[in-house]
Structure formats: structure tokens, C-alpha cells
Length: 69
Image (cartoon, rainbow, N blue to C red; front, side, top):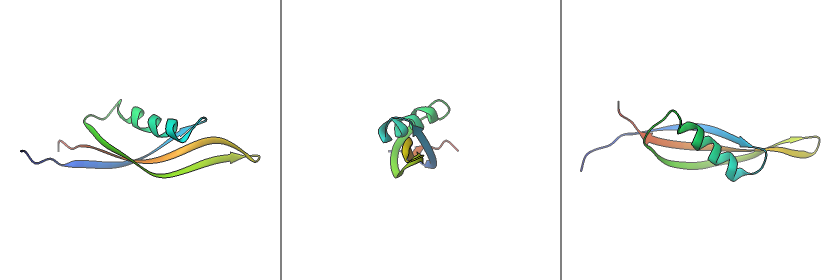
């Protein structure tokens, strides 16, 4: 078994529809420029409110990927 090192970054995804979609947007956008994604952990959820209405769902995600330093 080989040793591995992983890097963890914080991302914020948003969506006008749901927390799930916001989280998915963060990971899928990151996957366009990062390789070997491993684990995504949702650490915070919040909503943008305008004039008493929810206009966006936001998800803060910690994402780990294999570090090839």
C-alpha cells in the first residue's frame, strides 16, 4: 500500500433551486480543473434573502483531492 497525501479546499456553490444543487454545482465546477477528487463535506448551508423571499441557496463545501506535490 502506498502513502497518499490529500489537499482540502473550501468552496461555496450556489443555486436558485436547492441546497443539493448548490453543493453539486460546487463539486462539478471544481472537477473541471481538479483531478482525483475524493470527498466532499458540506459544512454550512445558508440562503440569500431579498425582499423577504429566498433568492438563492448556498452550500459551503470542503473538498479533498489527491495531492501530487
